[in-house]
Image (cartoon, rainbow, N blue to C red; front, side, top):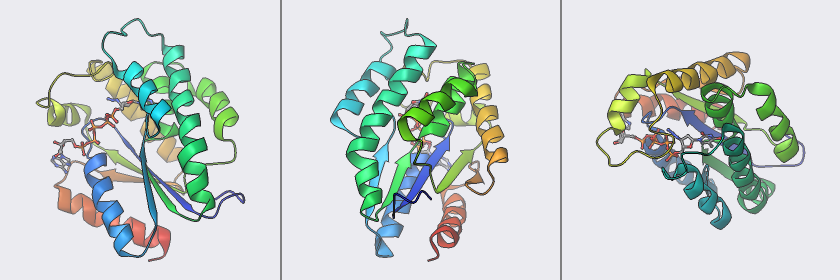
Length: 211
Ligand code: Z5A
């Protein structure tokens, strides 16, 4: 944890349909019951400006958006979220729970779009050299299974329409990052029922926060 903050920063990562939002709801409720002040966020999004950038990013009409433009927009949304939400909350000692953060840029833009890790690292250094997640839960499952979970929920957005090969690169990039930083990452087998996944999440939180 950086010396400039007192709070605790938890991020949730994984492919689509991995169950992040489902587990985030349980986490937040559980943390509050344990007396924590919790600030929730999601990426891209979480502020007025960042939600507008999210719309740009996910709109299927923007099919000509270049990979580098996409990466820059992810970091523009992130920079605003850090300024308005994450930095103040951590400075106040809160627990911040964020559905995706910079690891998603390494996975989707670095891996999926094949921009590579160096481009992402350069922007991460610029935007939040002083802030890193304290704990990252990576919800991992086979790509096709995740896609089948979300298949019935309406029109796919601009990123969801990507190929299985794209999402396989995303998964590989996530697992590679997790292997390089085992102290921060916990890889969770997301291909189990919600209660089994939650049981593991809960024990990770207990250990991570000393509860
Ligand atoms: N993106 C990026 O490219 N670069 C970046 O830097 C960042 C993001 C920050 C954001 O979309 C997109 O932006 C995302 C990555 C990209 N694109 N994709 N693809 P989002 O936030 O709207 O989408 P998402 O993060 O992929 O969310 P999701 O698809 O909703 O997945 P989820 O939150 O992990 O899953 P869920 O909503 O909790 O569950 C999905 C369904 O499965 C739902 O019906 C649940 O009831 C069900 N579910 C959940 N858990 C289970 C279990 N255990 N068993 C069975 N069914 C389950």
